[in-house]
Image (cartoon, rainbow, N blue to C red):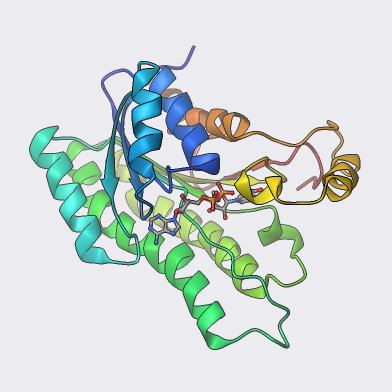
Length: 247
Ligand SMILES: NC(=O)c1ccc[n+]([C@@H]2O[C@H](COP(=O)([O-])OP(=O)(O)OC[C@H]3O[C@@H](n4cnc5c(N)ncnc54)[C@H](O)[C@@H]3O)[C@@H](O)[C@H]2O)c1
């Protein structure tokens, strides 16, 4: 049974969806969780998880703002003196066909999904390096591998995250830090809840395990890669899509 007792995990984009699922799974495994989100509702989500016994606190952080990141990291280091795990889960979509996509939609997605990842790792890695231990796991996507209509911006960033992961792992492995990614498939979140039922049903028919994934399914994938037990796994991307895309 994997446990994260005594470890501090930062989970970005934890206010809802997959990030909320990761927060719950990590709290159940005994971690102290610093949930980051740009949404104020992160506070409510954190309080709900805490009411169920989770050791979690919310920090309002915009990952596109290096100052906001640094402030949160400084607070954690001052109070708890450690960051063992960083889950780069925050991400956005701004879907539009390539013909219609504007620079604003391209830039917004690159800024959150890619620049945000860089800024966050820049602030956290020095502390992991000093401690001689760290686990970094970032959100890629099945669409990094198969592409999707209207997602040239999103798919490009999610593929870039895999390249970033493979390169960073080569630089920091000697400090006891592993760097991996998870590529979720079709997952039940607020986003998919708004889809028509027939579309969801048709999507499920394409998934060999015949169901949609849950935030908790994803939480368990992140949990393994964030564990001490996964110490020999680095530079990889775990595909969690129910077999829909065999990579
Ligand atoms: N849901 C899926 O089916 C699916 C599939 C593949 C990959 N993913 C990836 O998994 C991750 C989570 O997806 P989700 O469906 O839960 O999305 P979501 O939109 O429900 O949650 C993303 C969270 O990130 C936060 N966020 C956005 N911009 C931020 C910023 N600048 N700073 C801090 N927080 C910010 C949002 O406020 C939100 O709470 C994303 O990176 C997404 O690309 C999701």
